[in-house]
Image (cartoon, rainbow, N blue to C red):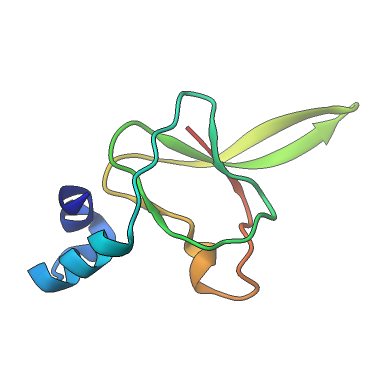
Length: 98
């Protein structure tokens, strides 16, 4: 996890000690294609750094009773998702899908 934090765009320039502290409280999650990291409206309790692959930030859209995800942005390795964890009301404003 050290490498993901150290090379993440958001955390570039942090001291080795700061990276160590972040790694100590972080956790690693592996998703399969199509799995959701979080859903619109979920409590936003964490930031995530994409280590590999791609995460699509989506807005669910209902048409004729069928819900489809509309991708707003796609992010790859080194990018951070879950910014809602930093601002009130601490709820995700989009869904994130691998």
